[in-house]
Length: 253
Image (cartoon, rainbow, N blue to C red):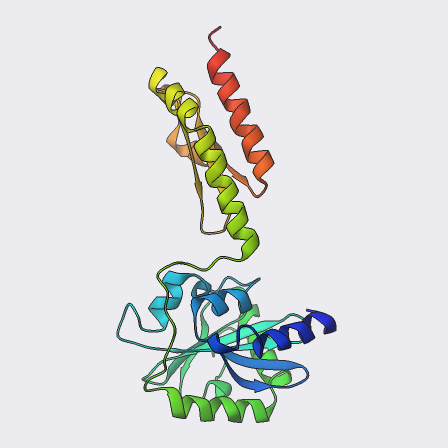
């Protein structure tokens, strides 16, 4: 995240997304915030493997789907780094960097978390350095004050539908269009030759997954992964579908 991008990002936090974003602390080089909705969780969690960017993960950790309503505290650092901790009503917490791995679990003050006694992993070392070098004391004080005031009951915003960025929405719409376009031909192929299996879906990584098994009679389950193909370009996916259809239609001619 360069200076220009970080400045635009700061404008968004106080602009069009402000109603769904809780800004706890903001300075020149760091923003500490809490996403009130899955939409802002997804937007500001871009580039991470945080489960809370998806609607199921967000609803679960914020208490919609279970009794524990945690606070999702996030630090967005100039230069592109992102780190967070999740804080529970019993004062348990865990940290995570962009990798999404839940590490450095503790209780009480999350900024006083201690590394494991036996062996410290790279992800833990990375987070501890960010806490020490990138999060100023003023920010830490603001966060602790926010936790004290909001831990018992924080009002999140819930929606039934998973938010997707516009370019992903467009990609999914294109996939649905192509899938419907060739649906009848694919169905006819599989009805004609019961040994052929062709299926596709839009996965949680926002990619198209295509599975093609030409002959289930000789299919080796141990090599099932070899039958899957991933696409992040709609033209590549459509061309591959047409290639399969043409092959299956004319292979016995």
